Image (cartoon, rainbow, N blue to C red; front, top):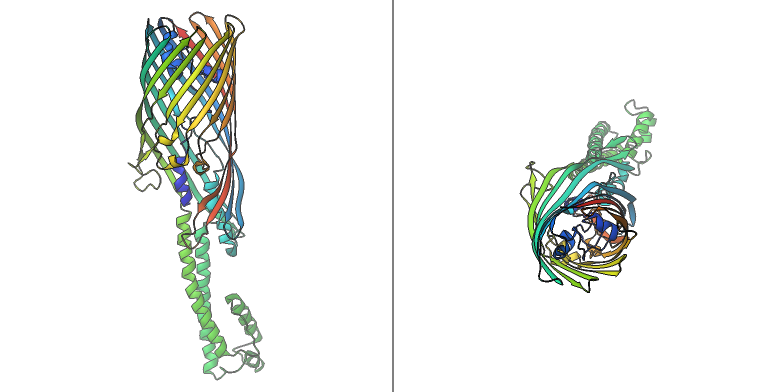
Length: 542
């Protein structure tokens, strides 16, 4: 359970992006989805991808609105083992989904000759959460260890009630000014404001172990055993006292076979049978009625009583440990924070065929503050802070008009993950990157068909990966079209599918043997995702 406390706060360090950003969403227009390479764009989505390229727009006001529907599936396998013993306690596959019905992008630009003012609104990070109905390995592995630990108590399985609903939205509002120095070179300067909001609500509770007699809280099973030992101690003490009658009556040195044969009404064959069964129940070995006497039996009863009386508190203490280990966890909290990042851009146009877009987004220092009404909260204690910086980005794009009907584009982005503060997690990442190529073919004056390919390296090392926060290298194919309804209006449609490289991590520490009851537990995990996006965008000029 201690592992759970460590990984839950990482739940919403996820991105809906299918590109190279670990936390920044790069799919910020329907035109990006249909083409994959937009860093040299001179359309209105250049507000995000190439602000300096906006000087290529016509004079006037321009509006762009797009929305995407994002569907992600996540599969995690986890295998937990007790080191040394080689005992596998859990080997299971977990499936999760992320569904974002509306992922909006809004852009505005107003051009006056060489000067362009622009603004944009995007879900720059987050935008959803992964839902695993059956939990994930780190939730279940510590519970699975209860079965071998309590096998002697008749435990054969376990069950629990889990529900965790988290949402994350990092909204980005940006504004910039672009200026055309001449027909060839334009520059831009702007900034993006980040407003981060995470919410966490759910529970992990009612952990029970399965026995032949029913399902019980683990601590109750141990207390029931303690009660049996207490009862055994009382029984043995009473039996010891009953032997005193024989000792006082002068039969202390007679074996029990002789006592029964003597016809003593105080000790019959039925009493001898009961004594034999009693010693077995108390775990006293070697009882022999031909050699054992009441004096010997009394000594054995006294030892059994002392042993049982001393063992009962051990199980009572173990019950208390298991109570703490399997206590209900309930969370109902939010996190919020704000940050700023500068954005500078350069656009270079050559030979009326080649356009080059360059932009740099600075790192945004982002500190999240917890808000929690529960003063005894174990998770997300009120007022505590955590760091979730947005990495800096350097992007460059080339757009080349091969022929009047065919345009080809190339993109490269570098994400400076190593420079952020993620409360230590930045030590487990490298800088990420992505390379993309896209093409547009004019089927007619009004209709453009497009396709693209994006290959991204996230930068996450094996040490970074957890079942609740993992980032994988990916390859994405995008398809779509743009249709110009009239000189002032165009509509874009896009579809993309992303395939991820499987990630893995060995030596995952699920639990430590730090309580004298439950064992250490380590494991191996594999991670996989898929993503599908449907997008529609509308551009209107005035």
